[in-house]
Length: 178
Image (cartoon, rainbow, N blue to C red):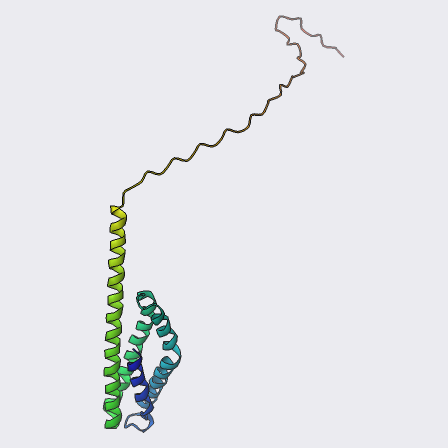
């Protein structure tokens, strides 16, 4: 990917959109897009590509870089189209070459990600097949817990006093009159 990005960077160095034969708004938009591409090439993409290079077989690491390259391609396409209409021929041709180089790099990067994804899927499927084919072992039953130490229960004596129950046949209590 880096050779393609170098071609894009070199192409940006020869551009002079302030001299293009286009309305001021087109020149301003093109200049803003060129500045955006430069920032992307210098600041945003390097750590994303480094992360992708650290694990080339990881689609998860490569995908952020790929998405950024896709966005970069879209912006470069806008600059190239504006250049076709307004830039001098040499600048227009330089932009077209840079766009073609980025397209080639982008395609190669996508193919590498696709290959990594296919390899990862094949590895996953073979591991799943191996897991299904492995003999199932019965898990050993855990040893029973040892019985709790016996504790002696102390007998408690209840010293409650019982009140005599009055039956209905007993003598009625006398009430005091006032």
